[in-house]
Image (tube, rainbow, N blue to C red):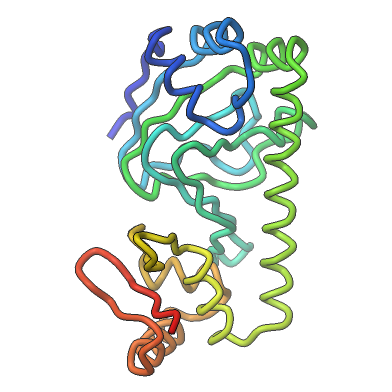
Length: 224
């Protein structure tokens, strides 16, 4: 399905930008300027939004939906580096150092995106220190998460890596830690560096031992 693209309206764009961490603290006049630059784009599930090696010419902001950042080795084996959710951005690294896209980004579900051209974003960065600091914070968070992932791959067995992944993906709802995001065992395997069969075995063991329970549309983590 071809992506649908249109200019974001100033009012709706302003409302969206106000809710996105990267643009926190910016004055309304600056947000209005950025919203006029932004283009709204809708993509279907499983659409590749950017490809590794593409030239970096824009920043993407996820308004709704989620996406996965992926890479492949020469044999075609895939690894999922991370998931990106509503309010998160991608493409900022290449805008800063001028390098091509370092990974594929694929819509994990239907997504609405805001796309801001490199020239427009660079102009906004030159005019606003808060935006520069927010992008720096975003990059630091990505680096910390990468360090944690490297540590888990080096020091944990598959059982521990799956358990940590479930914890990382979960959110508190009324005091209960749950995972509502749709994630397949194949995707989990690509995130923890194991086979799908091994991940299925660990999930069954966690469920049988009472650490998790799988309900309609969600996974519940039992913390007792």
